[in-house]
Length: 287
Length: 316
Image (cartoon, rainbow over all chains, first blue to last red; front, side):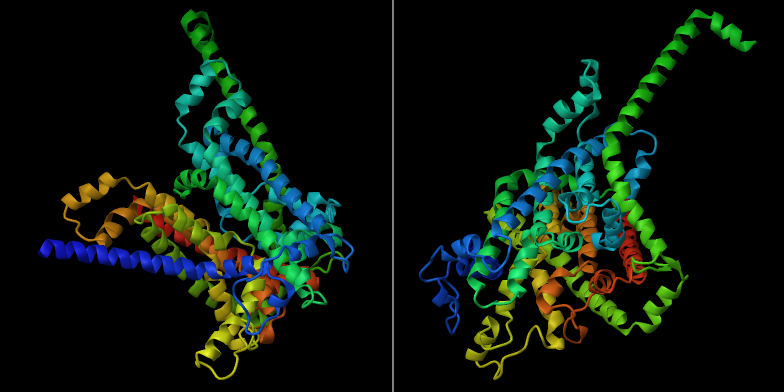
């Protein structure tokens, strides 16, 4: 009798925990649900009083408005989408190769000075990137790169977080694997590509996700390094849509834009979620 | 004399040859190493190391981008701390934010990760809490501005009015008293990010045998398990999360601007980075802005080092 009561109590409290967590999820999801539903609202539902949380008659009109009829500005919205996709993908691709190569050296080849370089990288993890924005701007403008894609890409390639992540993962790859490849006569380059990168798929999946999401949402760089309308990226364009003249008239397009900006990170994270969890285990800082 | 003897000895000759071969092969490895490292190193030095050094230099100068930088010693710093009331205000705001949102988001993401780890549908729950952090803060601020809108149409005001909790709409993002709480709430909502994932991964990696061993040694409650087994094992992850949340807490800027505007009413949502941005890219007083940047740099670096020491000293 007492045992079954204890069992019942345990089950009951567990049920309560689930209920609580589901309620919490519901609460944190509210803004996102609202955002999604607003993107599909027809004009009359957008201006209802009292405001309606969920859409009743969903429509794709807002998206057409956004993509085709942004007549008031000179640049079509598709240009911002292209900018964001191009810049984010370029950063991710280049950073993956550059940081993995560097991490391989720091983790396995360890030339003299490797420890010092890693210590500097660790310190670089510890400050906000905005701290170096002014000199970075001076360097970018000194190199004549303002308002080019290079200005948005180059400063974001050698990121401390990325090389740190790769190095922590490479550290737990057994050295015997590399030695075996050496004995088989493989060059360092072959070992890096065919051995190290082949077994580090979770690590570079993680780098791709974090780097893509971070750069996709990055607002500060585009704000500082570009002045021309054609070079703007999505977060900046959205901000302009929100703050520009005729705010009310464009609020449907704005909701659609917000939806478009938010979607890619979620899709990418969903695709790679399992791999990410496998890497994050190794990302602790050991000192 | 000794040398000639050595050379004549055939065994030593081969040994020397071997060591010379070894030396050259390790040198070759080092050259390869630097070659592989160079793309990273060059970009890292140009866009991270030099900017840090240059920030420090510029912070001692008056520089407006038109005329060359003029050395003025410590006066930027003395103006910053002694005369600039708005900086002191931004400092206060940032510290309030960091002290409340930093530890809160850190503990919250650990507790959530801990609870989720014991639930079924782990992936679904973790996704639900992670998604807010990967949405664009700028883009989502549109939703938040609707929720916290200052008129009767705003979601929160609307709810509170219809429930009779307030008789007049609250000007959430324009009243200096409520700006900071709103920024903190939105940041907390977005803060289950990288740290949360690291915790979750670390928790999954604690082997169940350790808990069994613990129960033999007399550990009875879940909280004892957490305190004596889980936490000590997760030190590297906890450290990573702590460094992350410090940097995030002191780097707060875009949400504050998106919600409260720039400058915000009575500077109530002004942060150190807002101040930095104001002087760097609106007023073009780069020397003064650099002093702000250098100050922020040392604050976060110092806190990072302290956290590292606190969490790693117990290991040995």
